[in-house]
Amino acid sequence: MIYSNIKDGVLFISIEDYINDSTINNLINEIDYMLYDKGMVFYAFNFNDLDSIDYKFKNIFQSKLIEIFLKCGSVVIYGINKTCNKIFGSRKTDLYYVENVRDVFKFIKL
Image (cartoon, rainbow, N blue to C red; front, side, top):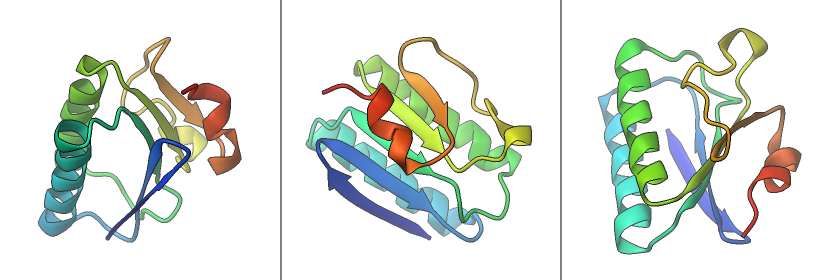
């Protein structure tokens, strides 16, 4: 299940429970709409309540991250346990992994 809201110019997206095709499609649609139709370039993804990350989701999510970066966007990922840290790669200036939501605005500067 996907939940989203905007706070101070950042789109917060929470992905909960488990990933299925419907969840993936909802995530793709939400990112595409906000990125291409609304011009949103700052994203924070919450994985606190996600049970697992499979190979299919990882590949699709990484391609969406690349689209965000190509629009000069920044992404903060939080709620991933230490063993999965940097699962989606690393970038010095626009992809950040943090412990919790309180740290999001330490890295995204509007």
